[in-house]
Length: 121
Image (cartoon, rainbow, N blue to C red; front, side, top):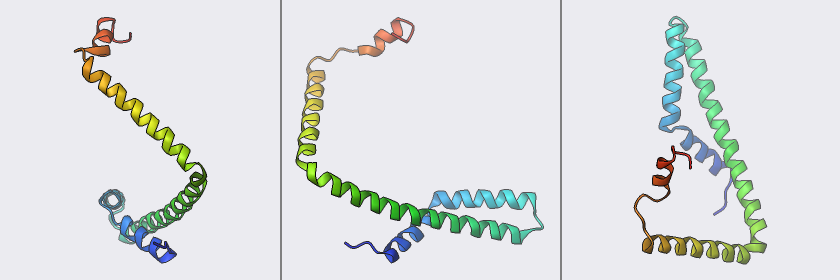
């Protein structure tokens, strides 16, 4: 899939209309409106500035993330097999430690010891 500028613009527009951003925008506008009830134009301009700032920020993040991932994939391609082996070995070690805990389970564990000595050791 090719990522174009128009595709990123669309994603930024969709992501800019999220509930969190809308809640922040609503709170900002209510705060400004309660301080200046006669200046509705100011409230509108602040709201538009917020929307534009969020949109531009998401657009820049989108472009930056795409470039970082493209660079990371290019850099990892040469060491991919070694990375797979290291991650596989790490997963096996974690699995062995989990199996050890299944067979050698003791109620309380380190938390009980910490509580007996004042909580720190």
